[in-house]
Length: 570
Ligand code: FES
Image 1 (spheres, protein in one colour):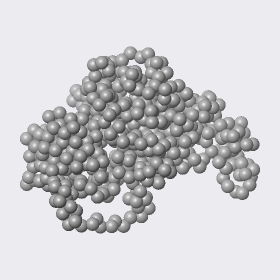
Image 2 (cartoon, rainbow, N blue to C red):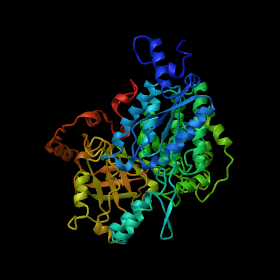
Image 3 (cartoon, helix red, strand yellow):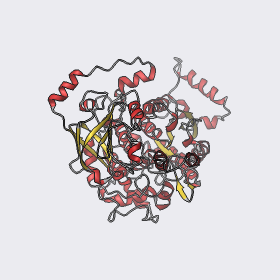
Image 4 (tube, helix red, strand yellow):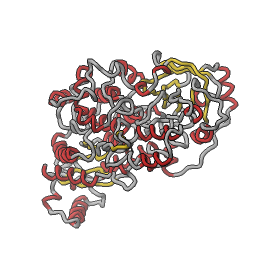
């Protein structure tokens, strides 16, 4: 049998020096699992399956797996799931981002090493979908994504609650002394009550929409709630589509192109999506040698309206978004701005998918392009003497009164320093100051935590201050909000001006000019650099050492240098 006609278990044989023996041995061992010869002769659909007791968001995976397998079997192929590591957002220390690249390597290598003709990527929680898309893009065999879907909301004292904007809102009220410990404990039991990912347009929901906008998932599948019967139907249809992908031979590199990345970026902006999504989309595109400069983000942001009224910036939740028409409705509004010829995993173009959407749209949740919520996109990149390679701001979640402002920097040297001093009654800080957090970037020991949403100092919160300019090299949870400037690049742990900023320095931000500038002379910065002590070497081994040696800055997606395709540069 030639390589071109081989499929399923007869491909990628274990090397014993005799291919026929390898094939015979594999069939024999596979038969020990009770499969018939007919089953073992079929094409194989692998199913990347990151279920874990440490991942609440994937609680519905066993049921979804059954539905995916049903779809594969009905279409005539053999479904075989394989475990990969799972990244439960709140169960990983120091951060789930640190392990995203590890999961992408696990996914890529297991796709490549095992005999499968196509692969279904089952993901959901924040970093799992980008990790799977990165791995699948590098492996580049036919692949399709299905997500777990968002959680449903619950109720507290007559109001709706959903993770995790409400987690932060109630925590801020508790910190300000507005609610008692008994109430915060009650709320704790009501924030996350079903299977699925966070119930708002946070990172997980944004990444689900990116997968669909790129064309890597079925149309209409991103927003279906995890517990809805449609979620299982989407899983079954994904299994069927994975078998058809074998016939069409469409690969991730046919679907993820410069044009589809532009579409995905436009969708992130129209959703008012998570800042984390920019890092992840940069990393996914980077695996196929597609650059995503932050200047491009600004160009697209200036011409993309915000259409979706979802928390953290708006009022509604993901279950409302699904009922309102979901991503298909958003794509239809954006139609004149999209690259419609992009191929998707079903073989349809994006334009054909949009034309097939006939559903009604709830305008309370999804605005029309002619009457948008905001005329410009939700995210903007700022450049200047404090961040020569850029920083990100979610302007749709920020206070417009703080967009053009100069302030005094109050600097915290690390997340530990922040925790120690932010609530110190003696801290010299007022509402007009800029809170600055350093050493929370990708190279820092903290692993780029979602610490960029610095808490308002307790004494100011108690006086009613709800927002301040906050600047860091950290990330921010997709569920957070405020005038928060993130991903300052180069980060403080790398050479550059951010490492040298000190308390008392003046900083100017201008969203209109897309600038962030430090008012300290070159000569003074040089003096500070010369007098700064070199970072003490950290004794690391294993994955932490690999991470420290290879991780790239935020503007390069925080991927590992050696995972980029040869010649794409870094
Ligand atoms: Fe998994 Fe929010 S904790 S998506």
